[in-house]
Structure formats: C-alpha cells, structure tokens
Length: 276
Length: 77
Image 1 (spheres, chains in turn brown, blue):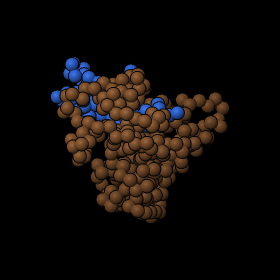
Image 2 (cartoon, one colour):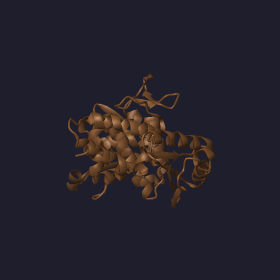
Image 3 (cartoon, chains in turn yellow, purple):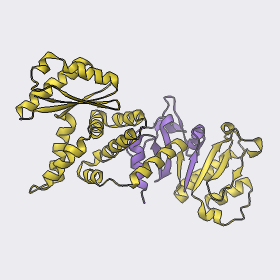
C-alpha cells in the first residue's frame, strides 16, 4: 500500500480524483501546534491537486501520531522516499537549480582532483556564486572550514579571487599537453598551490597587521628565489582592507618594492598588486 | 517522492526511526543512547543539523553545504 493510501486510511479521507496519486511528488508535514491553523485542521489531510499534500500533525496526539510515524518509516524503507527538513529542502532546491547548469571547467577540475576534494571544489564555486549574487556566505564558509580546515579556507579564498580561472585551470591544461600526464601530477601541483599559494595573501578576520606583513615578506622572499616578482593581497571589508594597507607600510616590505602598490577597491573588495 | 517537515517536528520525525537527541545534543539510537547515529561518511550529527533521511537502508543527512552537495550528486537523475 502506498503512502497516499496509508494516509487516506489514517485520516479516513476519500480522494476521488485519480490524478492526485499520479501527480504526487511532495508531502508536507506541518506542526499543528506551531502553524496557527484553525482547530478544525488538526490532524487533517489537505489535498491540493497541483501542489503538495499537507499533513497537519499534532505530535502530542498519541492516537494518531504513531500511525503517521509508521507511514513515514514505510515511505522511506519501501518506497524510497526522502524525508527532508524544510530549510534543508529549500537550500537543496537552490543548489540544485545552480548545479543544473554544469560548469564545464569545474567538472573538468573535479575529474582530476583527489576524490576527497571534489565536493570542496563544488562548494567553493557555489559559495562564490552566492557571494556574487549578494547572498550571505558566512554559514557556507563555516561549513567548508569545519569540514576541510585550512585546506577548505584556502580553496575557497583562491576560488573567490579568481585564481582557479587565472592560474589553476591553465596549469591543468598545460600539464595535459605534456607527455605521460596523469591526474596525480596535477594533484601534486594542486596541493602545493592550495597549501602555500605563493602568489597571493588573503586577509581574514583573524589577521593582524603583523601577521599579514610577515606573510607578505615571507612570500616576497620565496618568490624572488624562483624569479617571481609580483604578489597580490586580497581583503574583503573595510577593516581587513585597513589591515592590508597598514601591513604594506612595513619598512621591511617597502624596501623590496620597485613600484608603488597598485590598489583596486570595488564594492568593499580590496585588491593590491605589489611588484618587487 | 519527497516528504518535508517543519524544524519543530524534528523530534517527531526522528522518533519514526527510533532516533533521539542524546544529552550532548547529538542524534543517537533511542534505545541505546551510547550509539550515535552517523552520516554515510561517518560523521556525527548534531540535533540542530539534522537535515533528513533517505533510503539506503537509512541514510541520515547532516545539514551542511558539503553534505547537501553530496546528496544532490547522489540523487541526480
């Protein structure tokens, strides 16, 4: 017996329109005690021909609550239904819509990185899209860092700053042109970039002028050894931008610079390139 | 087929699968609170991060962006 039949039996409801069962895609469980609905809707089934079926549930009602719980369990085990928190479902729909337009460059990168990095890349690209659309990304960033730690933070920063397009993907294409290419070769180079990203410094809420100056100096000295003479500093927000500018005033850094720093600030995003 | 539920029905839905919140706020088996419920990739789930359940035999979903992405990839048609 399907979920709809089970619910009809519990609520003693007759559904005359056969298309309801055929078109059924979603059932919503509403907490009767929170919904503000009228008393007459308690423990009732609302049939919508063109939308989800609504089940007003009173969890405190011992005569009916266990029967609904049995239906939920059967729906998952026997019919393969998914039961999802409303908030999670909304976010899932948002992400699914975004992911439907597959990004060929992202999918190419995902096919080459280690398996454990695949979802990290997808999350970083998604975070960037949300940020560019003006959405709040604090929770997304927190989720990524909680799961992946420093690596997650670095991938997210590098992606948001456009380095996947400007450096990492071109590197993959270049490596592929070489004989005996394998994904492992790209993965090794990718690891180096992700964990040390010699071409950029990111200022975060945890940064101080001293830590940023130290990182800039260390990367200048490393890059010079390898014949690289430029570095970009990224900061989002006025206070992070101020820290970046104060760090650049450090005398030990200034002695290396061959030109004035080129600063670009757009929509609260600070970017500075230094040449040394 | 998708069943969605209000946040306030978390306890009710979890009880359908014999799961409850333990004293530290994590999902655990109701009749064996020492046994925490894990996601498919072995992570514990805080009560407020309970995203849902899907078949396989019972896959509990944690509500974070990485789990959401994996769910989407797993269920993509």
